[in-house]
Length: 371
Image 1 (cartoon, rainbow, N blue to C red):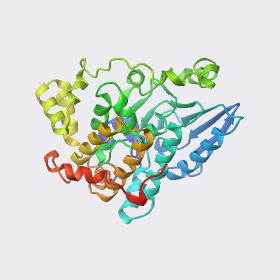
Image 2: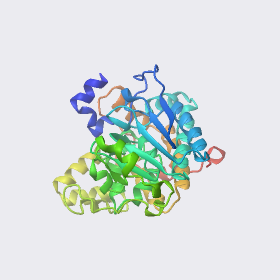
Image 3: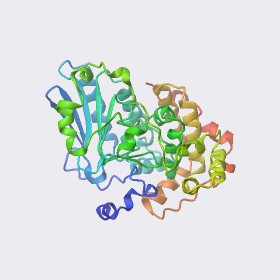
Image 4: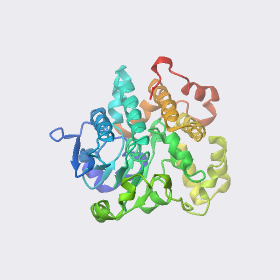
């Protein structure tokens, strides 16, 4: 069962992808989102702890209008978003439901991505301080609910990852915007491999803006971390905290991802031959070749685009994945049959042509995302 998988630690394996959780375990007796005012703060609590607060369309449709209401409300100074339970902020989107919809042509395959990205954009352009308490697992859709906001507070329990290439998807929810803006090639490394950042490394990498011990989060929120200056928006110019030199196992190891093609990155890793390089080579060999190539182009393009333009691009990519093969095969292997042995098509990087990748970025015409 779910709890047994969690307690055994196997759920933390990137190949098990906690970012992609089935929706059928949810307890519908409880509201899926709690929306409340605490003083002059609007507080959003994702309330699906049994599935690590996985985000579904119902939740999106509750959060978005409330965010817009609080943004124009003179009685609300800040917005705080957090997850219920002690394991996760939000482990991702309810991808299994999207998969089933995509198979039968149900509109959820369009609606979920479209409305999720509109919510991501609203967070990225929010006029009031937006504080995400990323205490626990923060992946996929949970990343989209946090990284675009002004403040992201990590704790020792934070586990951050974007492991979508393992199921034939790509790091969406604005990943094409924030990942290439991390230091060096760190964002590309995280995007291609699904590598998990933990605790203080989440702040050091520039994903979080603050680090607070989990037990001190309530106190920090009330009196220490967010001063009146912050509430008045004077800290906005600081942006992301200064990124420290990030190293996985040796200094500058992420430099191996400095290549213009996925094949070039793999060649760099094989030539390097270090234990780190061998591990990343093995990881990449398990990922969807199509997803890897789409992701590289996504981050290359996103580095010079606005968040809005990135989300338009990513919506096109999401629908290409819905039309394709690898997404359904990846979800089958990871979530349904759980054999962890997807049969990708094409099965090698060499078979994924530039033309195939380009087609995924093509305009959807009147069906394009509009922000």
